[in-house]
Amino acid sequence: MQGLGTIPTSGVSVGDGTHVTRYTHTVFAYAPESPDPTVTLVGGIFGSSGSNSYPTSESGNPGAIGETHVNSGFTVNSAIKITGTAVSALRYLRNICNDLIFGETYTVTADVTISANPNGKTVGFVGAGLPATARIDSTGVISHTWTVTKNTNISLFKGKNVACVIDNISVMVTPQEQPRSPKFRINTSPNDATVTTFKTSVTNAADTLINNDAYNGGNDTVAFYVHPLIVNGAKWAVQASGVTVSESSDPLNFLRNFNNNKTDGYINNGSWTASNSYQGTHSNVVKVEINIVGTMPSWNINSILKFVVTPTLTQS
Image (tube, rainbow, N blue to C red):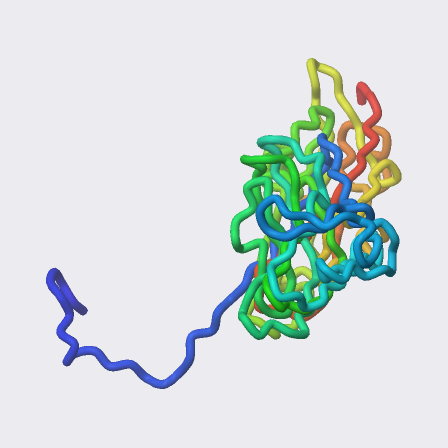
């Protein structure tokens, strides 16, 4: 033990071993109140730094899927995929998403494969207050959540002499506080509708096999619950058939079978219990389980599930 003062170096020894860096996978579940922005790669404006730009008539038409715009080094493969060829200066694909909302929080994701980067430059996304962490200099996954603080446009950025493929590009609304849907609440609590936690996360070392149990205290899935609420004295009801879950962002395809794992139930002596007996009543609570399978990459990952919930008015 050491009291006040400085430990002398002669009294410190370090054994063999290595420090393992751990990365975080976070799963959000919510009912969106704002629409997702539109990602539009086809018809984007190709340009270089400053005010320079290349017209669509020059060495390729960026509005046509499959054509390469030679001077900018971009090929639009699809509405969510771009191939970048190496050119001798940095390039932008301007305004691939331009209907963001000031103060709203979003997540931008993409799978990036870099085949050449002799100058150690980055590729990724800029604009709308995005930090440098939304760009990477080696093959990996971009998965970054941020709040729009500047302009409302995102551009794709590719550094000098970078050759790459940027696939599965998406931008989606991402809550940072409990959604304000007054008739129901989505959270991680099986027995308490007042809990406002609607995301769960786990940290793992890179290359760790994710086999579900790490996410929920030994259970084999991540679980979210849809609780009905009381609004101005009116009781609402929710049930599994009125809940639809969609995958908004899932880097590396971690999430599985969420629409097959919806179960009606009720809170029985403080514990959620599966039952069809309370369908159509205010006592019914829907459990949604999400299987998670995969190998943890050496990046932090955000996965986002969107819930569409149809509540019904009831006095039961």
